[in-house]
Image 1 (cartoon, rainbow over the protein chains, first blue to last red):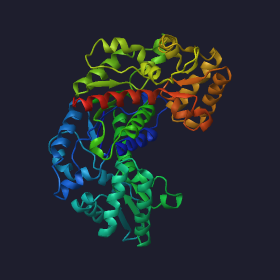
Image 2: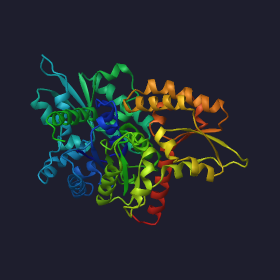
Image 3: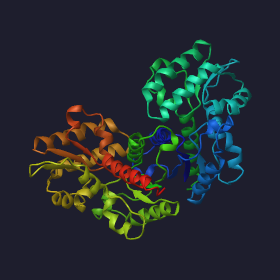
Image 4: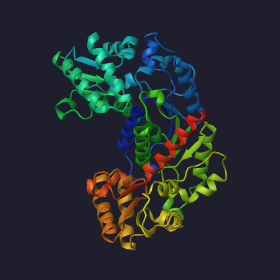
Length: 235
Length: 235
């Protein structure tokens, strides 16, 4: 059974579940993946904690992960990029494998025969400050590009708009930041915060081929694990 | 914490969660409702069991409800109308209150000063055969209208299309059945199966004011309970 440690934010978790259900090869209810999902909204703000401006989310994350394990989860997915700062600490406390969203994104990036493919990152300030993506992209041979400080402030504002349910207001800001990264020479832009696909879902087809959705990448990793376990009849 | 006994079907549960999250007054992650959600897809087909053509879903429903209670649920919602045939049996085995989707629908029906308001039911054959809605609507002073047998067969086909992810194919059939109920004199039609709003979401604004969405009614009941408990600081 797949455990989902969610609610960071709530709409991003619903987006993850929707993408997972729609991607599952199923002809009836019984073909779908068994899941246990925690919406744990009281977990403190992850970016604030990484920037040393807020309380520690680790106790809340740990409690939720343990409750998923107790409920029978045999793997755990966390549809929140910033929370992955605590991935090593969480994984150290459970024998249930916790998928890593940034590993899933790097696996999902298109393979190219040329070097120096430039990847822009749209993410929280916490994710960027914690370096969750930078090292992984470098190891994969990619060149990482980040927005400047002023633009990063705008991106955080747009992410908060999604958390408040104001998707249209978020989309206007986010599309401008996406265009800046593409005009600056990025070949692809990773939506490395699970709120961002909710804002950019309305952007035109012209942009879609440049965007890598971390939520979809995590869905892909979950499906791959589920299908391999089903083949081995682990469930 | 709200427990959701879901996965019947998977997409309908995602629809319920999305409507609940979007309806919650929230400005940030921490404002949302804490939830534990079970996607229990292996629970056998409810309609088949009611029509005595398939295995009993009660053991699976009971196991899922107990696991939600153990995980800390203080109330339980089941976003599947047909499963409510087993509502009394489930409620008898747990002290956690289980909301009733049909009660939520009757509460959500517009109040009228005239008698004999006719309500059409779009539901599974299991829900209709079990009489989950008929008695409640009669008690509320409403007159209930059901599709004929041939049309009911079409409705079941359309519900199965949703469970297989084929929403467009379902919508064509479902809209025809909706129109038939309205042309037959129904003032309102209850989408009394949580797959149906997924099919009819694409139908025009002209129909929307005649439709009562059982998923939204259950969301309303959950929100009402959550907000009253928050006011009493039960969480």
